[in-house]
Length: 360
Image (cartoon, rainbow, N blue to C red; front, side, top):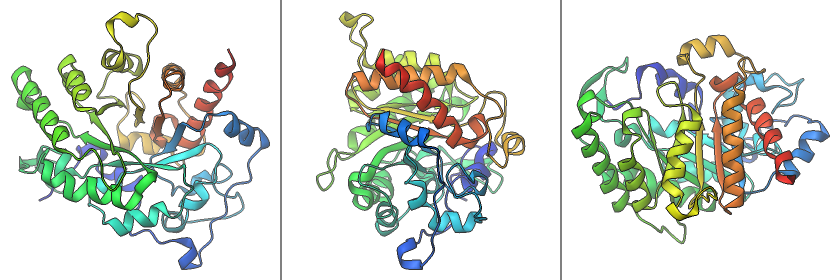
């Protein structure tokens, strides 16, 4: 038995990240050709501030032909998973990528280092903590909870199996290290249980290292229970120097409501409407409202077009990115194919919403 994610996302995370050890194209002889993009996208990339890191949950989708991969090339998922990262990182707007694979199996330093060597210096990785730390339950093969997880929010396990290897391997290319807490049992998110869980989050964050080999880790917490999104959680994260990861998922409030929690976290009372972020912006746009992962996969595959554009969410995220830019803080926006139908197209549209407003 191992800690696993909620049952409706078990197979999604497996699909949305690598299923095996990454191999450097330079050492394997493999070559994945990047898409030949319109000059307008190249120009959009030049205009988007370098502090804005847009990225997808992973990079190995054959359906992204002419979006990320060269159109006439019929790459398989396996080829793209093993050799596609460097081509992905050549896209002018894709400056970040999620590593969700770590949720299922901790990675070694060398594995992280192989990722880092395939991307430019200003590229960043958003890495999920293993379920052995972030899931309160030990789960069976179908994701059903079986018993309590003794390592849930364990500082020593988090350091040894997540934080230390990720920072040592990725070095300057490490973006947010995200503790995405799987949905909790009812007694852990009720009034008293929620307070206790938040206190455990605080104890974990306070025990994590603030510097590793000259690198300052960026810690973020993503919850999947709306009951936990409270002033107490916001205050705890602020006091610990961690960030609230805005989780765009049907289990959570809409983006505008979550952004209000972020504003509460960062805004001083006397500042009024002149809001400034006190730390980086971290967002994971996971799944369209009203859908489960399997439903979204069926509806959106092969992920080459926008099926359900979510204009209100894009507008909220564009505003938050503007606040981050104004605050001299970096942004990390990671989009899933199941958000609107095609993660690269989602991020292109988001960039189009951000850049023109910079001139106003």
